[in-house]
Length: 243
Ligand code: 6GU
Image: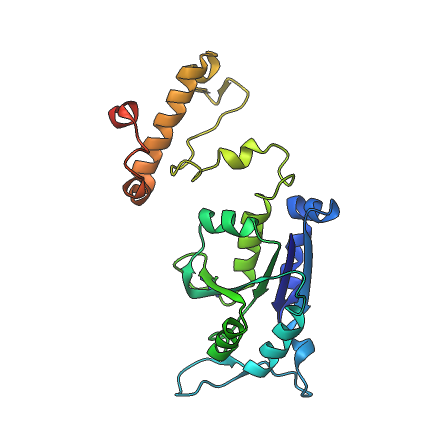
């Protein structure tokens, strides 16, 4: 997969080169290019923003700069791209979004700052046949899209074949069955007088699976009842309902 990020703070995206993602890049599973939006300015001040029509606080990112930047970055007809614009006013980014995007060949992220990007930039991209997704990573406000891009790229990249050492890690995640994952334990058997639950040490795989499922149900009911409400009619069986 190829990922492009356009931003006025390229160094913010440096963490993409670390750890799991850095290894994915080194192994050729992922290609990441970060572009400085100011490279597309023409004035000495390299201005990227201006005051909003209609008044109000904050600044809006200028359409000319973004237009030229996206023309250049998207100018690869051989590799069609989805354009992603992080914004608190977007549709929610979820694990389902991550799975859908993991099937794409190329994602281009346009990081806005200030009060956002002039709306015509997105209208123009859509008019040219580019798929544009405006997405939010949660109900809070960040100062710019850069950190949201780090979040989304990590969520997508770990789903790419070969990126995780053990593919079961992605297959058995929280959300893969619509429930939160329950607790985990490793050695030692007793730590600060706290013992690992007996069932996990017993070797009865059916009992372990049942126990894990019950803890997942319990945790989801406690922390995210909205997820239980959203499950389809066949998601829970009789044993689940008894739990
Ligand atoms: Cl994607 N961007 C910004 N700037 N703030 C956010 C967000 C995104 N998601 C939640 N808050």
